[in-house]
Amino acid sequence: MRVEGVHRRTITLSDDGWAVDIIDQTQLPWQLRVRRVDSLAAAAHAIRDMQVRGAPLIGALAAYGVCLALRVDASSAALERACAELAATRPTAINLGWALARMRAAVQAVGEVGGGGDGPARVAAAYACAAAICEDDVATCQAIGQHGAAIFEATWRAVGRNRPLRVLTHCNAGWLATVDHGTALAPVYLAHDRGLPLHVWVDETRPRNQGMLTAWELGQHGVPHTVVADNAGGHLLQRGQVDLVIVGTDRTCANGDVCNKIGTYLKALAARDAGVPFYVALPHSTIDWTMASGAEVPIEERSGRELREVVGRGDGGVMTHVTVVPEASAVANPAFDVTPARLITGLITERGVCEATESGLAGLYPERART
Image 1 (cartoon, rainbow, N blue to C red):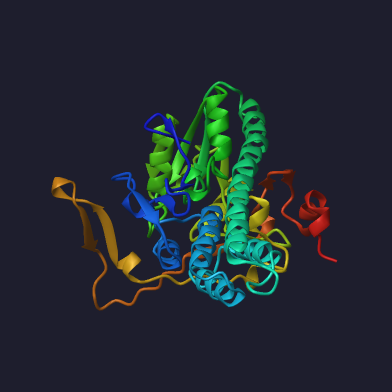
Image 2 (cartoon, rainbow, N blue to C red):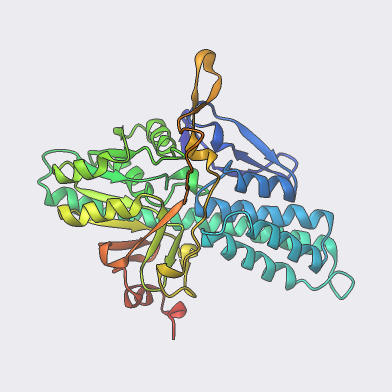
């Protein structure tokens, strides 16, 4: 992704070759700050406090968190402790568990320290696996962009090609949520680069305001966009000002239900009522083949402080916390909701586009189909 005209990824190895550098997303869109993560505790903190966010990127940093833990202690007991600590940081995004399972298998294949394996070999295997997870994410997102851009092109032709394609998105499923390119925004960037005229409506996505990350990304890439309040989405759809809705997902169930940032379900309902196609873009690592439906997804309940306070840049450019909820009022802060498969026009994956059904997913991933 381009940032100030320079291509970069959201996570890279530090100059020392073992720590990792991440973009602290809690500082965006006000400032671009790179933080060095050099321990298991620092990786867990970065995930839990949303210095990194987005299901694929969480998985990538968790993988490197395992690497950092094994540098201190490469035993199987330390591996299990690291995986448990990282798994507990965010309960909803399945990519986290997927990445940890890959890391565990790669390290265990080397053998136990003192029992035919050795510490340096285990560490090397961990770093190789973490790098492979990152490269897989980049290639996957590129492929999602190709399949999604074809849908954008077809939709633009269908609406007459006499004006920009109008796209509504929710939360941030762009470059900042992945290692590079993004999921739901990958088709936006590719279509824009190919010259297809488009305009993106960007939901603010309260209470964390991840829509501002989307706006920052789109601005860096030169994509026309407008930020709107979350509650404006239904109005835009009702007035015929949206041609297509596209979002990401933190967990996709075997039946096609998707779990995404809170508020996604409302957009899907409004899109269905307005007759506007609603697409979900996802990598293979976001599919939970063990979960039959969205009713089983654990929904993360985050701190009420996120809802009570608004964070912004105050006088002198200083980040400021402003209280907006009466102290006597109770707050609830569910971070995700489930959009039923029946409301989804199609799932856009790295292997193509399918219906949001068990048979649709099985058609793209026959080797993973439930029996």
